Amino acid sequence: MTSPIQALEQQRLLLQMEYHTEKEAFRKQTEEMGVQRKVKRGDAWWPLKVGNSYYNSLNQLVIEVFRTTDQDIEHTFEFGKSVMFFHQDENSKIKYLPFSATVSYVDGDRMVCIIPNNGYLVTLQKTEQLGVQLSFDETSYRLMMEALDRAIKGKGRIGYLRDLFYSHQKAETFVFPPLHFPYLNPTQEEAVNLVLRSKDVAIVHGPPGTGKTTTLVEAIRETLMRENQVMVCAQSNMAVDWISEKLVDRGINVLRIGNPTRVNDKMLSFTYERRFEAHPDYPHLWAIRKAIRELRAHRKRGDEKFHQKLESLKGRATELEIRIQNELFGEARVIACTLIGAANRLLDGQKFGTLFIDEAAQALEAACWIPIRRCSRVILAGDHCQLPPTIKSVAALKAGLGKTLMERIVETHPEAVTLLKIQYRMNEDIMRFSSNYFYDGQLESSPTVKYRSILDLDIPMEWIDTSDHLFKEEFVGESFGRINKEEAELTLNTLQQYFERIGKQRLLEEHIDVGIISPYRAQVQYLRRLLMKQELFKPFRRQISINTVDGFQGQERDIIVVSMVRANEEGQIGFLRDLRRMNVAITRARMKLIILGDMPTLTHHPFYRQLWQYISNLQKDSKLT
Image (cartoon, rainbow, N blue to C red; front, side):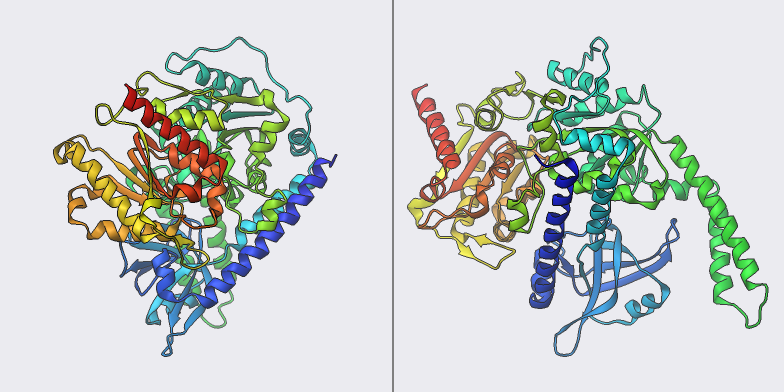
């Protein structure tokens, strides 16, 4: 039996393997991939238009850049990501500028980047044919390594939690009669009570459509009746935004460290940066900072009082910054950030009674240890039967890097886990397969959605077998994976036929929305291009979104169409073997799920064989009734 410390040391080794694999893949991609390919993938903007530069409210030098081409491509830039600027020389070779920058925020085709100093500003403004691309993220790895080191050496509370998570020793709880919440269902009520009773750890396991966010918001509200302030984290900026928005809607004062992915006034209003700027003392601070910059710019030779003046101004600026920061933190009831963002220097010295980690099943364990050091107890929420963390190193994955802290605690502390069982999203027939396969058949449909459908006597799930058409997949480069162009065309034709059955007027009046999902990025981009060309879909463009499975995590649509892509003689299905991804894909649909896939290829795998059988039985049953 390995000790907790040995297990974490093993994690650290696996994380180093992942670091080296990702760094090497990034190096190869940077050297070998042309600019246009990066732009098409959404990992680069080129050429850029350079806008204003200024110091933001946190006294960071920033520059605005604008995307001028390929504006319909979904890009992967967001707050906190590391980027590099480049230009093309006369031989079309990419030359990188000698510094990296950090994304402050992105709003459509405008991005604001934090740059290290003034010297680089001039370079950016003078460079022609300038572009920007994602950079390798050294910082996240460094922070995760440091967090693991702290957990390994930890004494006191962090040491206690480490030993608890890796053993079967019972987690401690309070004892009190259950509280009742009339607006929650019995399993949600049970989850909130479990959270309130736990002294060390609790897990809210929320399968698709079971109201995990509603439950978590309630648990946070109730915890705030007992504690002054809590910390709420998630793996992605989007997940942090989602829970923050729900808390703000319930009248809770949230302070968001970092910028949101959707830049609108509501989301920005609870960010630290915007609140800092809105503080009554900020104009005074801004004036002092301006005076510091002017003093440095106009320093006279032999000015003996220069250092004295500078130190005096810096002292006043620091004093004001601390005062504003203390007031903002003092007013906030919830401090919200990503797991990596929990290492932000703004949080130095901050301690919390409770840490809530949402979407915990998507986070590497090492990332969870970053905020855990600030807290006494940990509440994790998520679903380990949906999307796992993304891991590039096959060896590290096989050796266990993909096992999340949430999965570990589910195994060692089943008494600390509560399952939400009533789902409010899907027609019963769509839900039943997922429930039986992933959740021991424990899920139930709320009566409000049980029989929901778009058309009378419609079969909620269909599988269109593409093997009769003899379609074949194609390979299009390592990181793009596969494409099946004929299947993409059939996907849109199938949707068109279904639209014709519903009728244009009803589609528009009832805002029936559609998600087209494919596990492969190349297929997603091909489908997007096809959709743009087809006149028939023009009136419905706003109602149709096309994305990968990961892009649809946490979302739902009335109609979901899935293009599976794989079609080959050998029955090879690649990463479609990751069934948690398919669980996400098939549970996004409220009323209608259509799968297009080569049945002989896919049913080599028992999961797809069972899915095919299940859907065939639904079709048989509908013919009998």
